[in-house]
Image 1 (spheres, rainbow, N blue to C red):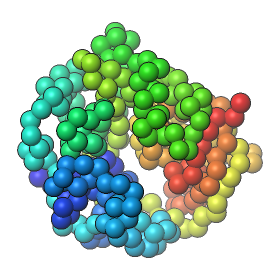
Image 2 (image 1 turned 90 degrees about the vertical axis):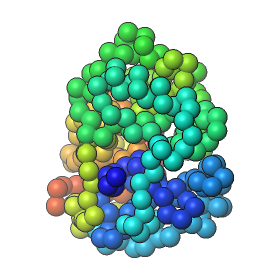
Image 3 (image 1 turned 60 degrees about the horizontal axis):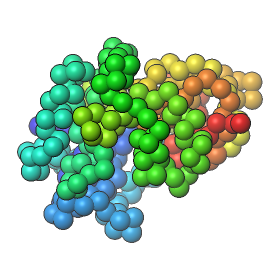
Image 4 (image 1 turned 45 degrees about the vertical axis):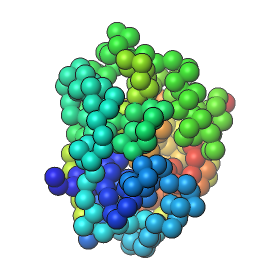
Amino acid sequence: MSLRLLEGEVVVNGPIAYVVKGYQHPPGYLVAYPRYNILSRRKLQRHEAKIYENTMYWSCIQRSVPVVPRSAWPYTLRERPLGALDPLISMLESLLEVDLYPTGSSLFVERPNDYDFIVYGADQEVVGRLRELIDRDVIKVNVDILVREYIEKHSSVLSLSDYLRIKKSTILHGLFQGFHVNFKLVELKTGFNECVDPVISYEDYTGPVAIVEALNPHIIPARYRAVIRGVELILESLREIYSELEPGTYWVENARLEHRPSGVHLVPDLGVLRPIT
């Protein structure tokens, strides 16, 4: 099985499973974060992850990134015991007419709190089918699901009220057949072992940003037409939480304004973005 080189893919290097970040990688390496011990089948604690995190400075994006060798191999379902995940995948794939890639804790933890799935090569037709399942109550979205998602993944950087405002129209989190499921829709089918969109220069930015229009709703890399200081640019994010923003004014902290050949991009991923009251 070949590597996808894409966001959310799980790869193995030694006893550790890493989660791939982004779509462009240094030649010979993958940008990936250590997340799980495949021998003890558990998530790494933060101090443990630091032990297995090897970083390098990559001039393409002008910052240090955690990497593993390109020789790491993709983690497959055959490497874990069969369980509740398998029939769940089959049903969802049939309903959505896609191939689902399971990722996250459900691959390793005995009794996961939720199940994370990625759709590679996602487009607005997939978005439409997912929305239809929610409209028909096949997948149920409620506040309890969102609160659980917030507590597990976002409580350290956002208030609950800000998170619920960001996710008020979500189609990516819900309850299916009694299971808490999360979706990450990725537009690409394969990534690159090269620099695709280099950062020529950048500056840090904290302040207001007006989002005018979502260019690819619910899909990552999320892109929005946005305005800062009266200048139009693209807000771009690889984070699922920022893939469902609605038009309005937001406050962003510790973001980067990146000047690339493709234009000026505001990237909030290393900081935090919240709606302005």
